[in-house]
Length: 70
Image (cartoon, rainbow, N blue to C red; front, side, top):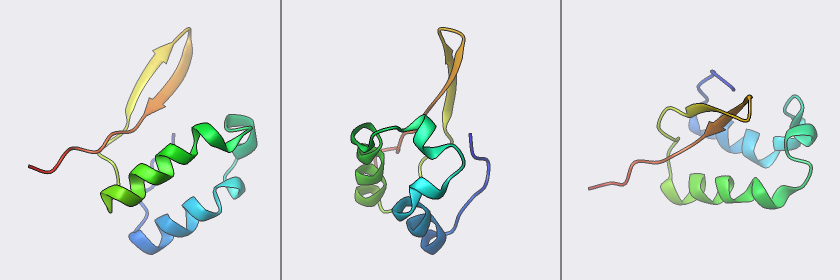
């Protein structure tokens, strides 16, 4: 999982060009399950909370969430 913090302009640029990330097509062979992350990021207007990392079937998995504004 990425540990770098990107400022807003760089973050948006990286989302637009996500295929340039290392192993992008291996991790996301098709876009339909990656695009909801882009939608959530745009609707929230800010980065996620720290990612949740879990192991499932002996594979590392990452999950992202945005805390709801109160």
